[in-house]
Amino acid sequence: MKASLLGIHTVHKTLTDGSRASYHYAWRGGPRMLSRPGTKAFTQEFVRLTIGREKESRPGTVGSLIDGYMASADFHALAFATRSDYERRFELMRIKFGTMPVAALEARGVRKLFIDWRDTMKATPRSADMQIGLAARLFAWAKDGEIILRNPLERVSKLHAGSRRNNVWTAEQLDTLLGKGAPHLVDVALVALWTMQRQNDVLTLPVLAYNDGRLTIRQQKTGERVAINAADAIRPILDRASAAGRQRVLVNSFGQNWTSSGFRASWRRELARLGISGVTFHDLRGTAITYAYANGATIEQIAEISGHSAADAEKIIRRHYLAGAAVIKAIQQSRPGR
Image 1 (cartoon, rainbow, N blue to C red):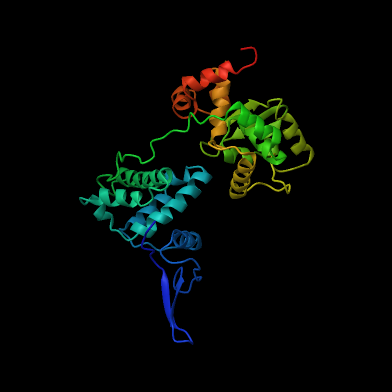
Image 2 (tube, rainbow, N blue to C red):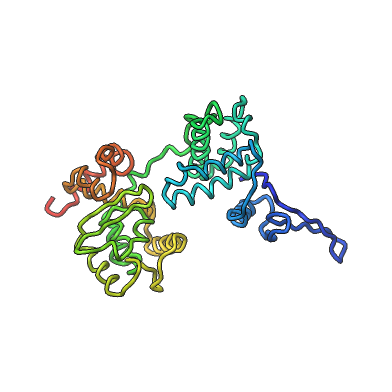
């Protein structure tokens, strides 16, 4: 992804052998950057070094618009994980458009400018869509506050048109994971399958959430509280964590709390070792929902466990998580006694 990195301080020096060298710093007086300029790694290093640094955006710029949104009640009403992701993505937007005057958002051609920027990230279409979707959200907030008169990114088409709802783990894949996987990763998979919760909610599940055979989970993405009976398959995991006096139910091979990056790396290596491909950890949620439906659970019962609202349960579950009829039929036919 090519971008003009604002604030980079470059120093040119003549070395003792007479050659010239250039050194790049995240800002004047800031840390030296080690990645090669013009590469994706260089951009990522810049974001990492500057993401926590206080910045002063000029009034009337897109940068100041970002600052205003991040200080708003709308932003602070979001879940912590969502805010963290937005902050990271806003930094990329600030790098490219931070000094653009807000008035320019009304100009003809600005929509194409942002779409062209999105297209520089087309190698990762879902991420590119999320990036421009966040820009559209920012401009919608500005329009609602009468800072701008129109949102130049309304109804932008997506690069990523696919859905993972038919990416259901097969019985063979599940048997391989649960039968041959590393115990600390099998525990994570079992909790995910039997609670139908998202990865971050599973990894950070506190031991205190388990009481008298029930789990009470506060979903970080939605803020919803979900109370479910703990399935027999995961009660030993919950009991062991409680007996050990741990803070969280699930820990890594060193007995320490998982980090998101640490888990993703361990999970990726384990699937490669087991020869499992074509499915992700996120697909476990859709798999659990699809298997439950194929085995007689109603949409309403699934929603009670997964945490979807009663009003939106069927639409959301069918659109995003419930596999097609052919997959469900195959699961039903694979059940014992069929």
